[in-house]
Length: 238
Ligand SMILES: [Mn+2]
Image (cartoon, rainbow, N blue to C red):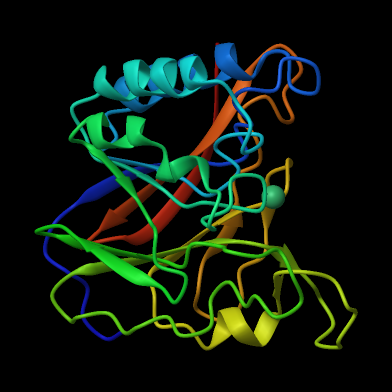
């Protein structure tokens, strides 16, 4: 990408919040509330949750309602990508009637082949997972950026250093990433912050909000700047 878009944009990137699992993820609600506050205090223009937003398809409606409450506290778009814990399949939790009353700033990727959410200065691409299997390729089919806008990909899957068929599900290989034409790839599936950038493509797992800092929560902020290009920071917060 030769010329950078004209507008400055800041994104807050998180993933693997696992809401609705009081036993496995006992502080998930607290961590998510802190992350919503962080999106505001870091002045993010967009918030991304790269999969496993909810822990399983059997969560109570009340979990979704309190998620909606949090989202409606923000006046920025919140873009979420279904992962292997919250699949976009026939029985998806995202197909509950409840979602017809979702906050107007919530965007959920629902297409299993990939789709774009388009905003004035930036486009987001994501492919909603329908089956966590070796056949599911999280970034394959990503479209191209338009020259005048930032372009961010979102994907939920397992990064595999060696491009060999290991039989694992939802794999992302280094060559899958390096061949992308996006300014940033927001990844989810790993609980720990990890840099898997390839070639000229910045690609990061944000890790879960309650991931690495023992007494603190964390998320990534990504600055997309016409002068300085793309810079990311791992942020910690209470
Ligand atoms: Mn996952």
